[in-house]
View 1 (cartoon, helix red, strand yellow):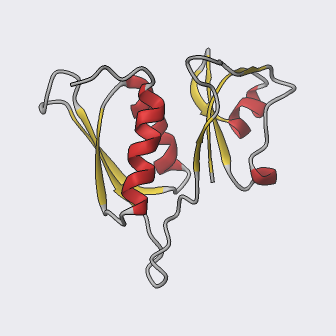
View 2 (cartoon, one colour; view 1 turned 30 degrees about the vertical axis):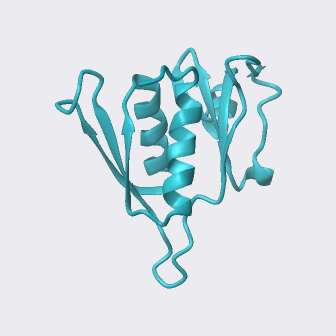
Length: 135
């Protein structure tokens, strides 16, 4: 098995691929930051549910139930975009926090207070690393 250099990009790609294939559930290797991102996705209504399985292997697994519209079968997630990459980290201070689709999407930011959304970062006026955009 090859070593993944960017686990968050891998996480987003697995979600993107599962949505493209209309899967109901997707399995992703767990890490603390991925767990925090998953909790935010559930909180903001982008996914139906999630389950952390720590007995599968050493690092554990995240099972994510994807959310689709009942009639049209369109995913709740339109796009997942990685912003800060290992080769080019993107940081923002509390005054320059990005707005995603004029507030319709969310930016996930890793701060000193944990992984939070752009809205929460603005309210608490703290900056951090812009991990990804979701809309």
